[in-house]
Image 1 (cartoon, rainbow, N blue to C red):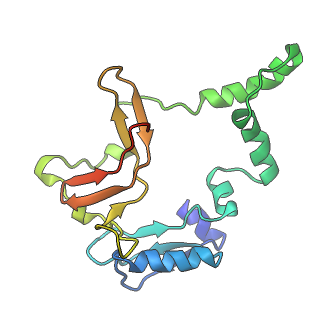
Image 2 (cartoon, one colour):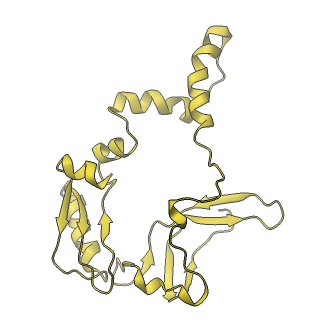
Length: 183
């Protein structure tokens, strides 16, 4: 996706050293408010990892990420899911089949291994300080992982949920989150 954005002039590489404490967030905020491109910070204080930000901060980049070519296609594909009405008659049901098939492909699949498991740190090897976690606001209590995928499982039903909750990094192996009961 980064290569695709770069080839379309939608990504700027920033090679100067930047701080994950307030500086990256401030630069990104100015860029998004001016309609600027996605940013790739390649030299982040305290981390060997780069930071990509503002990847989905424009309608065009969002469409590109979803591999949708136009707003019309967006509306056509999503209308079925956002305003579901039972199809009427045989013809309506036949027209709905491709969308039902598309819906079936969105559910997660269980696999034994994947790219996300190529490097796994456990126990004493866990060290969140190696990640370039940002502090975005001067009054924040510390650095926050801003869009993590948090996987939870209900202890009674076994049902799994994936949500995005800002996670505050407390130390090398501990985070905390504000989690509301109704969520």
